[in-house]
Length: 227
Length: 227
Image (cartoon, rainbow over all chains, first blue to last red; front, side, top):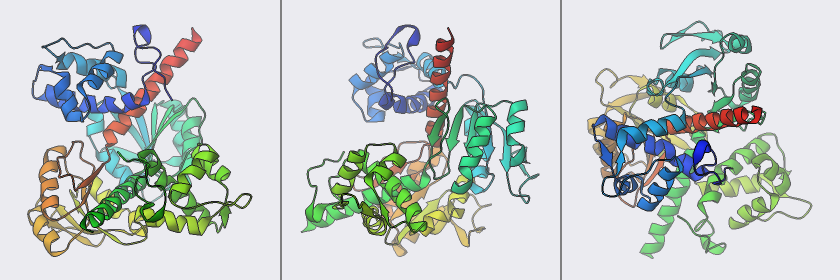
């Protein structure tokens, strides 16, 4: 968990509360859309309306990154986007490897939007002899047995795990042994990694169950209202 | 936002705080794993350790669903799993349609884990003439122009949007016109839907940017420690 002790100075991207961190990619997306339309300025009120939060929250969020809008003028879109890109680390190239080249792995390997933001998948791995050697989006699928050795020769920052749950921990261990510092985990299982390694989970099944729960709750409310 | 006013009685799955709702699929996954191993009982302490929360939090969460463990005995795995499945609406079949049969859409259409939990993709749609008519996991891809008419004849509960951002709002409108009550949105764009429709977003790009941010922050801490 983060705390909000250091709000300015050299450590301006330290100590940002987790709730704000989660809004950062949303600011990034909205500002990218505005920049693509060549919009020069945006007010906290406009940003707030698109994000469904209060304008004062937007001003508070952005002040954490040392970016201050001007009264009656707003924020400069390109400048603010540049600052947020720096904070998110998407102004530089980030090398990634992907393990598990099944349907989901292939979908991610083929999704070029990540590369546009500097997230480059350098190599693909799988354990299935029928998949090893195939080409996906101009990259050959390599044997996962060579994963750690590959990373020692060609360091990368992020490892993407798209394997079934049962294989995920072993893959995570190999990624860590190869010097990976960030794991993007699509396998529906909690990973044990050293404290120096960050893990971000994408639990598709859990997201679907939350939607199912909300639907069920809404149906129950509808029935209650009819009574 | 939910409130925690109704903790028992007939409305036991109403008024559950959002933070608890988000843990429900995790309980579901852990209990499924235990049930598969034929484990009969589990203590709040064991569940808490796997979820990295306090045992008292587990007891409080589960008491919201009317499930109480016994001192020194714990919770009955199968009973608790059954209750949570009911709350999540995964004890019954949920019909879904998927729009956007590109790489990501195909990955989801081929992912049989959802069907195992009762979430059935009944039909696939796309706008690309090269894709319409193809078969994916035994289902023919239909023309998205017929989406609303299809849903009026064959009602479904959840619509999955895997289209590019630019097409997502139009697809959402068609889904709503066809009577869909829940949208699982993979397109990187906020959707405008009536209040009676639930939306659950999966923003893959945002998840990757959050990982990138955490990595960058951890690197900065490492450098600071070396100074």
